[in-house]
Image (cartoon, rainbow, N blue to C red; front, side):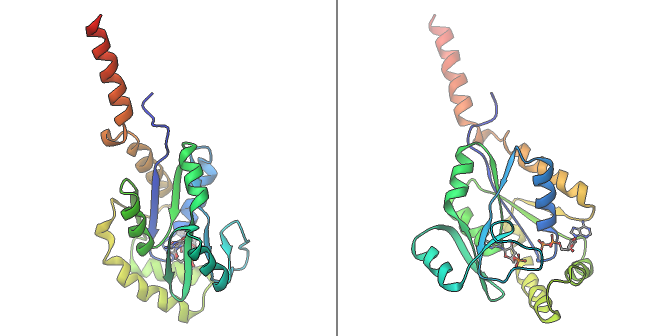
Length: 212
Ligand code: ADP
Ligand code: 5GP
């Protein structure tokens, strides 16, 4: 068996409005048996249609700071005035169950996760152009122009960090992009460094042959 038992931890980042959330929804719809999407905690207010425990665990600042104090988060960061963080338990359970776990988080959090778990796969999603990014943010219609401008300003900073990532995926055609993400994560299972147990078992079996 080539596939290792433990799942791969993947971080997906990208400018606000690049389409990460949309890609993750499609990926989970198509391949729910393979992937587990971590649900973050945040202090930002729910957008229309967002439900507690589905898109995010919506928490007060006080509740969030308690989670930090209890070490219940793998990482957390501030993004345009709000806290966002990854609850620890779900990620560990799902990785142990052999699922490939995806964290859809911003760059500071991504780098913290990479430092804690060096075999994390880092994937960056970009729209085809800056103009398209703005169109998507405006078209989504969930933020004021002021917040959109802050998110675009944040994108300038985030663009400086793209080289920290392993892969860059352009979200132009949504379906193609979903397949690219799926292939990148699937292929990662075949990396020699992720198959140490299989290699050791094969070596042992071969040595046992020559003993007979
Ligand atoms: P993010 O999670 O990165 O902030 P969203 O998934 O909310 O971004 O997408 C931002 C907007 O762009 C949404 O209105 C979404 O429907 C739209 N969108 C996402 N992917 C595409 C795509 N490939 N082509 C056109 N529009 C897209
Ligand atoms: P949004 O408010 O658009 O849902 O998310 C804003 C940013 O926060 C996005 O870049 C998103 O990826 C990031 N984010 C969501 N959850 C987390 C998290 O748990 N940790 C960190 N560091 N960033 C997160």
